Every structure is written in structure tokens, then in C-alpha cells.
Image (tube, rainbow, N blue to C red; front, side, top):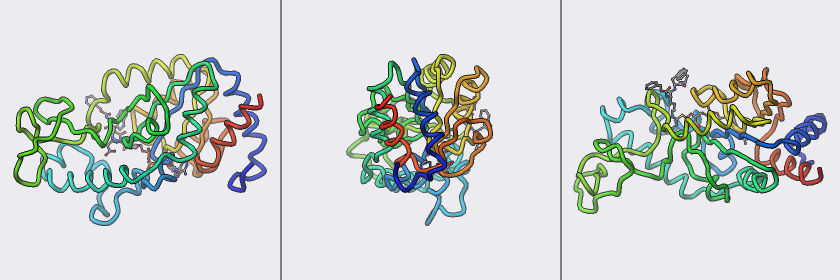
Length: 254
Ligand code: BV8
């Protein structure tokens, strides 16, 4: 066990490893916390500097974008640069390896940073989109940037309209396929793991509730208590980058 995991957690870790090792289908939901150790501020920490004082719900919205696209793009370009410089951490890598050790693993992420894919995870369900992709505001499709657009706002190469980041803003629907696949996994899994999320944002946070309603084990990995903590068992209180590799190691010995 690493020093970041208190000795009191050993029993919980063993229980969690046994539950995951015995599962036919593991469903994992990750949030901003799993990317924190890659240097990407968690969603609620991302509002510093120029954007301090804004709540995510105020900035990550279509209204905010339509009101001041340049201001919102500056926030996204700042975050894109952090994502480009980031590397997957031990938590991302452990989940990619775990998928190779259990019969079936569905990975649903609220994160828009693409780090799970860069860690080797496949078929990642990007529940809130991907910050590195552009989407045409008018055509509602992923689009290339026009190279000859003047001004400071990126424009669509095919129609010349405004581009927006290909993420799901507050008040917007989750992409239908992502929603359907994630719901199906929460309905079918034998164990649900909630990793690095405050469990505040819906409908993503509702996935754990589906698993709880079915009576399957819901394991939480988070250094802090969340809305889910009182319902989860076991709760592995610590950073994902420390907990997940140990869990993987214990599973490997099962
Ligand atoms: C919608 C993309 C409706 C953009 C994001 C009930 C049902 C349905 C909707 C609602 C509802 N109640 C309220 C709503 C509305 C809203 C909502 O949930 N609001 C919240 C604030 C109450 N939901 C929506 O608007 C959703 N859409 O409902 O549409 C609709 C219906 C019909 C027709 C049209 C529309 C859309 C929500 C998606 C918003 N987009 N991201 C972008 O990134 O810019 S959400 C955003 O929050 C990120 O994706 C982020 O991942 C996500 C959740 O946050 P967390 O990941 O949990 O991050 P957070 O910072 O909160 O927490 C980090 C955690 O990590 C902490 O717990 C910390 O302790 C932990 N941690 C820190 N370090 C570590 C760690 N853990 C492990 N290891 C570490 N080292």
C-alpha cells in the first residue's frame, strides 16, 4: 500500500478488489478529480484568474457563449492548452489496464480532456463531449476550422458560421448515444465505480443512483466526501492516482 492510503483503508481496498474481481461487468464513471493529478484543475477549481468569480453554470452555457463568444472561447482555449500539456496519470493508466483484466468494463467520463483515450482506454463514453473538438454552431456537427477566417473567433470551414467547443453545456442534452450506452451500463453492471466526481452534475450523477436502485455495489474513490459518499460502500478515501494502481494490484492477485 502507498503512504497516501491510510492503513485503515486496507480492509476496504481488499473488499473493493474482491467485488471488482468477481464482477462480470464493471461500470466506471469518472469526473474531473481523476485528471487533477495530471495538472488539470477540477471543474470547480478551473474558475480562477480571469474567470474567478464565475460559476461553471454561468460560463459553460450557450447563453454565455452567445452573449460573449470571445470571452468564453478564451476560457476554453486556456483549458485546451492545459489539456494539451497534460499527460495521463497512474489513475487513467490503471483503469485502462483494469479493462483488460475483467470480462467487461464500461468507462463513462464526464471529463472533456481525452486523457482516458491517451492512457489506452477504448470505447470511452464521452458523456460531456471533448474540449479539443470544434462544433459548428449552425450545423450542429463536428467541424474543421476555416483557415482564412479573419477576426478572433474560429469559424466553420464549410459554412463560415461560428464554431463552439464540442462539449455539453449546462441546459444542453447529453449526446443521445452516450446517454443510452451509459444508462444501459448502469442498468447491467455488477459493480459501479464512481471516481473523482463530486456527484453534483446530472444526469451523470444519476448513473450511480441507477446502480444503487438495483442493489449492486457502488464503490467511490475520492479524497473528499461527496453527495454519493453516504450511499457508496466501500468508500476509498484518497487520490485516484494512488488508489487505482493498488486496487489493480490487489485484483491481479485474486
Ligand atoms: C441537462 C462540459 C437538461 C463543459 C459539463 C437533474 C436532472 C437533469 C439535469 C439537472 C438536474 N438538476 C440540475 C440539472 C441541470 C444541470 C446540473 O446538473 N446542474 C448542477 C450544477 C446542479 N445539468 C445539466 O444542465 C445537464 N443537461 O440536464 O439538460 C435538458 C433536458 C431537456 C432538454 C434540454 C436540456 C448538462 C450538464 C453537463 C455540463 N457540462 N462539462 C465543460 O467542461 O466546460 S459538467 C462539468 O461538471 C464537467 O464535465 C465535470 O466533469 C462535471 C462534474 O463535475 P466533477 O467532474 O464532479 O468535477 P468537480 O470539480 O465538481 O469535482 C471534482 C471531484 O474530484 C471532487 O469531488 C474532488 O474531491 C475530487 N478529487 C479531487 N482530486 C482528486 C479527486 N478525486 C480523485 N482523485 C483526486 N486526485
